[in-house]
Amino acid sequence: MADLAAVMPGERRQLPALRMGAETLVLILLAVFVTAMSIAPLTRLVLAALAPEGVPDLSHAWDVLARPKVFRAALNSLHVALLSTVFAVAVGGFAAILTVHCSMRLKAIWVFGFVLPLMIPPQVTALAWVQAFSPTSPVLGLLGLALTPGSRHPLFSSWGIVLLLGVYNAPLVFLTVRAALHRVPADLSEAARAAGAGRMRVICTILLPLARSGILAGAAIAFVSAIGNFGIQAMLGIPARFPTLITLVYQTLNSYGPAALSDMALLSLLLSLITVCGIAVANWLGRRGDLRVEGLGRPAEIDLGGARRWVEAGAWLYLITTLLLPLSALFATSLVKGFGQELTWATVTLENYASALIRQASIRDAFATSFVLTIAAVLILGVVSLFLAYFLSWRRGPVVRALQMAAELSYVLPGIVLGVAMILFFLKPLPLVGVSIYGTVWIILAAYLSNFLALALRPLLGGFAQVDRALEDAARVAGAGFLQRMRDIVMPLLAPAMVAGGIIVFMSALNEIQVSILLVSSSARTIGPMIVFLEEGGSSTLAAAVGCLMVLIVLLLMSVTSLFSSRLPKGALPWLD
Image (cartoon, rainbow, N blue to C red; front, side, top):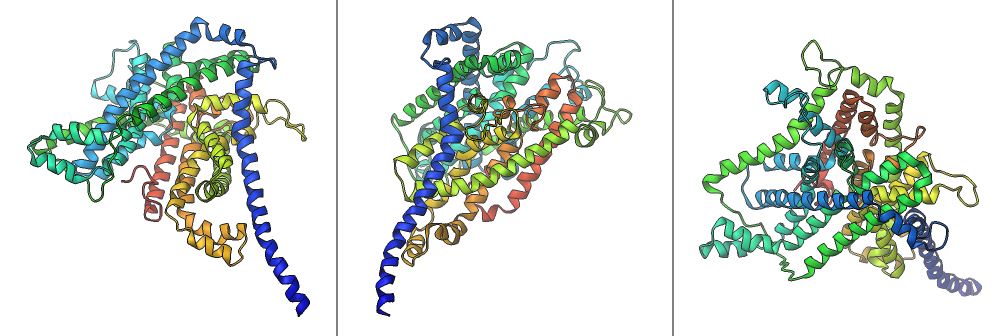
């Protein structure tokens, strides 16, 4: 017994070292994962842009960036991004005030419809708008409001791109401004009203200044989204011969292939610089004269009085014009055999849906590939983000902060930039195995893991902030190892946040186009880019059918997850208040 007693204390003294070893091993694995998925590809992108032959060559960079077409594309990118951001801030800010501070009837349904365009892939949105406002519009034609046949399509212009980007990004501004308005104490507005201030004065002098941080954050997100939105810029800009940086990268790869990777890297670096500068300016403005006030209780109500009926009518008219009309035109186009054909009982057909789901093997395989890659990304990122959020919340240090910054950078940068980085990094055979994953589904999965890690991480960080660490500490004292604590204590507590992150990643990755447009091949295609390929190939009715199927998937996912909203963290579903 004495010998046993002499041995046991020694074993107990080794347990902390074993636990520390498990934590260290997991942290090393996280560092390897983020380095391989984000840091290394982005570093390879910078090196390919500034040192294409292995040594710095700024003269080559200047030769490429000084070309007139690059300068014009950069100005066009700034033009559409800035103007669409102004539009998105105006519409999103008004929608936030209307739904938070005004007693709007059927508010939940209106918010669902207002946020829905954000969930629909941008290429589907662009296709729906193109078909809705074309001279052969199936809906406007029935109403006698279609354009004169043969006239130029109004959306094939810079203003068309600005309009669609503004409509698409307005929900992003709405979500951030709504969150900021909920923090404004009601007593401030009520005091102003008691002092005789009118509705507009309260909005302009109380609500908007106090929601300044949310407005600027929304503007920054809208700007970044507009700069990197390939779907809308490609569907409208390429036919209009209105080049932007993101379409220039796409057309360069299509024209010259991997031989132009150095030029593509430079264009991607320029696009990234514009994005980072936009975020930096917004953050700088947000720090100047910050007026944040944390409030409790209900937000102040603004009585619209006699204007209520007109305001509500305008709000619903906006949804009809920007959502119902385009989607109706998309559905009507999918039911005819030829684009521009009038929809009647004699011309209606389900041929396009049969082709998309059964006859067209490429489309069927693209759907299957997208589902498999999306599910794989959700499962992998669920585990990775849980451990990374643990270290970020309870074991903060320079290494984990660097990993978080790398994950955020991969998400913030335009997706096409990440696509170029993945091509550069994975084009050559991988070390040790000697196999290249370029042109396979694995490079698309790697891009998803890099691009959506930040999305999976954010709900978990919020979940850790609400969890009492005492339970984990008690399990540690009781002798539970690191992995056991994560399995038995942390994971059950954070399960709702993990589910919320998985939902966001699933909906974002399933119809994704920004990253995968450069990575798909004849043997590895996803459903997101199929809209662009079909439209470019002249199969507009088939593209409409695929677009309708994608919208249907989005609606089903939103409906199913809404049923379980009570079990998810508050704010996890953006279409619910």
